[in-house]
Length: 194
Image 1: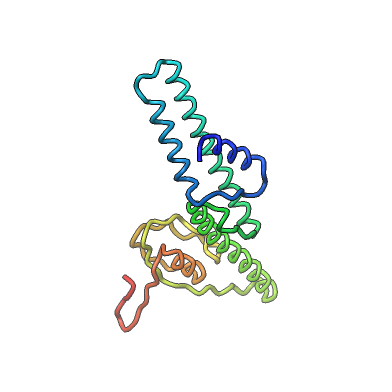
Image 2: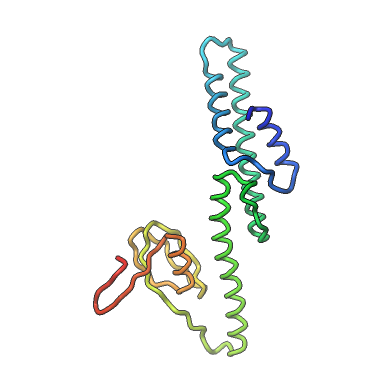
């Protein structure tokens, strides 16, 4: 890939609504183009005009790479939010990993919204006087994590690595599945999971 290819990809990405198919090595190729351009801009033996042109070219290539990445990020988020499938072959490996993480979090949020809607229907059927029972689970955080809104609409956190907290089962399960927390089990006076 060369700088003309980068410009063509930038222009297509900006003008098309859908994600364009890119090779899995796209971002490493962009990085190579930027490194080569940076080396050329700082090469000795250039007169002032050549150095200025080389520096400007590097800045333009850098901007194109950044705009491609940001445009594609927006398209990935929009596709995930509208529950569209993203064919893996259209995404470079870095974007495929990003899309996977976004899909997990958006899926968790949609489940939360569905459960919330379901709970409000149940609450309306039972009457507003009966509280909705929320099952809780004890977890230990493996890393720092920001505050969350539980399915019971209470705020939990923020959490630091090694914090132990009691959370609604649905939230605890999502955090455990993401590898952020570990379930703490109690049996016969022995605590496991710590």
